[in-house]
Image (cartoon, protein in one colour):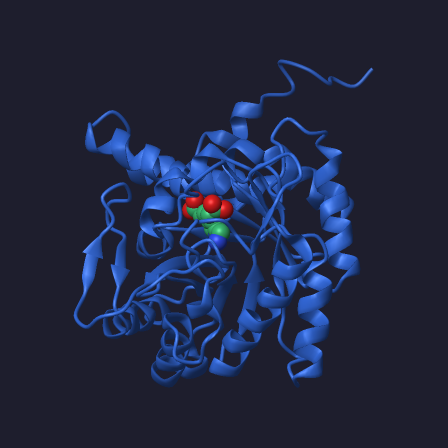
Length: 333
Ligand code: PBG
């Protein structure tokens, strides 16, 4: 009988020396797997602090360019852009205009950083509509309004083409409309962008962890909530598998699970089910702000907690992490 337990086996042997611990590590972080979300707004020389997200700003295009250059210099995997328009209306017209904030921002960033930095755009309407919902509203039989799936799809294609023509390297649809990846893929292909990858927010939950983002993007729904299109946190976990499968069938190249920390079971499940598919997870605003606030009180060590959290996301199976800490992490590593 071989000695298969103590005292022959001592797991602490491999923990004793830092060099040995490093040698046997499996989960490592690197800047090129991190994507930094940035918010762009009209104006010049504007760095408007976002109160609920310390260290994050609504940036005018000139300031955004500086951030993009820093992100490139730090070797980040990319940036993802969110536009906050001068004026919002019922359909989010600014997002579908060549003269809109996001079109101008993408052109400017591409001109300055070229191919030194991957530029991703978030394709959605909540930042651009005056009601804060992610698409076109239609009256509901039972009273009130709901987001019209198919009418919204048409506008999302218009929006995505604006991003593509402005020079975006990748688009990230986040509206959770059914069929979004299919219509974007065919719309892009028809317009000569068959090479442009789609990173789809495939499993995006109706989460309270988005609170600070909605302040950042001024995109809080003016009535109701997003539960009729984003996923129910209490739904069968396997529903995420269906969402991901559908998006892959429709042509998604990379899929996102969002939020990250409270949904690591979903990241792991998707990782196990879809071999070879790049998986991203979005370490969202509420996850960011909780740590910031606690660290400000001196109750936890921000750097240690962040590195541990991102390690957990990676260990759960995420290849890519969207995080407001991307620049910090690149500097810490
Ligand atoms: C939708 C979008 C949201 C986030 C990213 N894309 C907001 C929402 O669905 O309400 C949230 C990101 C975060 O909380 O950091 N355009």
